[in-house]
Length: 353
Image (cartoon, rainbow, N blue to C red; front, side):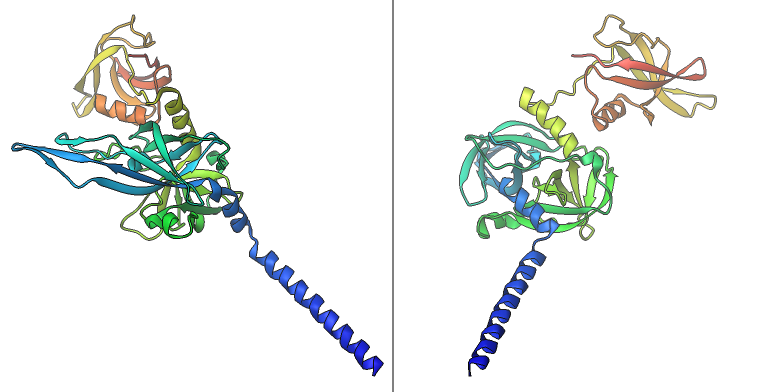
């Protein structure tokens, strides 16, 4: 009888040990690089809520319209409450006939606590806005290095799609995929005026409300700001590289705006040239060598045909290239000019206005 009791005890003990071992294995298998990355970044992801009153100016007078409200995503980048998001989450391009009140921004952090945010600055061209909430010791997202992003690596989109942060226990919503392309170039959008260049492409699912949220890597570091999807495709989302976003955010924090005004120190007009009169460039009528721009390598009669290798035929196209490449006053650019029927590359340092 005693022997039976001993064997039964050993059997029950080994069974318990096996159960514990299985639980440990199950727990370990649930913890992956992606789940760890989500856990690391999620505390810094926020919901962005905007409201604004609008009035339409008509020939009969003024007419109140339905207030504007929207929701999007953002992420805290410092413990003192600075937040990155998309500018289109904050401001619309209204018609001149529309009169608006001040923009009211509410930020909801994981857990449900709400804060009123102030707009530090926004830039519609890069589609980046910097917000600030009052407080300290906020959880924030670590910013990675988007120059190191590789096609095929894991990518996780975090945010507030369909306002689910408020409807799902106040936690950011995650979707995973890979980086499917880098340096995706859509140039300057003529309708919105946005610069959609050098984007990170991912097949992580993005939905309305994801805009402004972080795209993170498998380490939990932010590599981009989720910005838009291709409407005519499935799972083609695009994010602004975080290195570019940091540069814009730093300038917004310092100045409140992105000043892209520059001086060339010259005047030029569109000009048709070439043996067959089939080429178009910009004929330099005058060079002001006393201007803030350094333009000593240019002369009256030169014909500008390219900027940084991009063919240009108008001043508007030159400005588009400068926006595309994010050149500012003080930067040196390369111009290609026709001079006495020969091509020359010359330097021009952009001046301040």
